Image 1 (cartoon, rainbow, N blue to C red):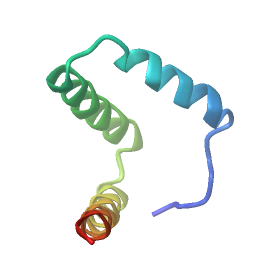
Image 2: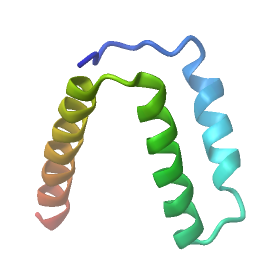
Image 3: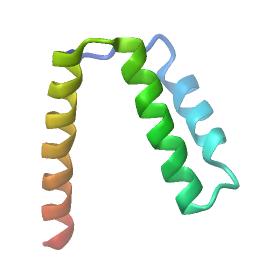
Length: 70
């Protein structure tokens, strides 16, 4: 799994992502995120890397939840 920065214009990507969510309900925003995950996963196409990313994201989510509960 690659964890070093690899987006040529991360600020531009972030701005586009924020714009895509503007005006959406929480549910619509979650649906957009789910669609985006599957589209990006399909672009990557590396099952092992995808599984490693899922594990890393899940571990990070657990840490964030624990910090929020403190």
